[in-house]
Length: 338
Image 1 (cartoon, rainbow, N blue to C red):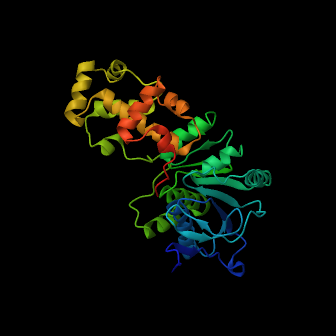
Image 2: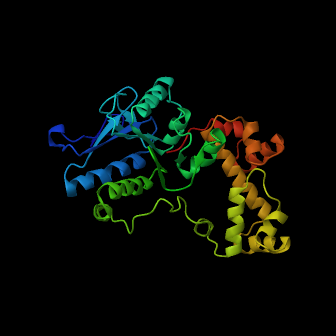
Image 3: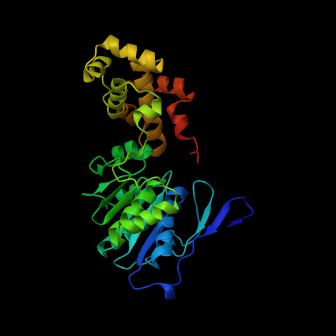
């Protein structure tokens, strides 16, 4: 690994020599989109490398980019590609790896190439927000999929007819999607287990000092209780209701009835455990969702305000400015942080 003049990490991801690969080797191709998630990408490759260490050359991996050149990750790391958009063998798997602004570089030529691969029998998948690219190409219709939790609301707004889950990963026929981050490890361990048995998957897992192999239905995020530091079961339940219902938002009375308490009892719970009111807490959740939509979609400010349960655009703008110290339009122009 070399540090180049611009002080960014540059790495070469080396593929295995063809002469050493047995006929049973499975090919994985990773299409890196500019700004891709480095941890999601590396977490997908490393299990393949370790599996090969134990069982010989079971897997080959190849890095692609739109033009065949190096691609910059969101953390500043530059990864050299092996090739540009090329024909792939029928039994291959292609995973689109993206991060912030996944559709910024999704050209018609790229989408056409993906559709052609699908018609040729290539298994298609995505890591992190790569699902946006497949969806835009019309390649996720009728399939179950997942992506990073932070982008799920934006994805649902853009593709309301698609079947989105909050699982760590999804494998649905010739579609494979991962939430990104370390969930890519869990995805690959599952694929290794299916192809070569659970014993090998356990061996690989232990090399990463993992306490356990997470099934796909594990939670992407910490449970509500851990995120907010609360243990009261009714309070945990009502926060879950808030997170699921931002448009239209539920009234405080409806929230209270959902956990079978009075409105006054609900207000007492929030004051005791969170030093807040239900309405203020709920408003904060909706504003955080609005910020995600502004940064991750091309929805107008009006559309975002409606999607987050604000009937009045002026009230939305005032509330947004009070929380984030800038108006919604200004926040849309803020550069994404790594």
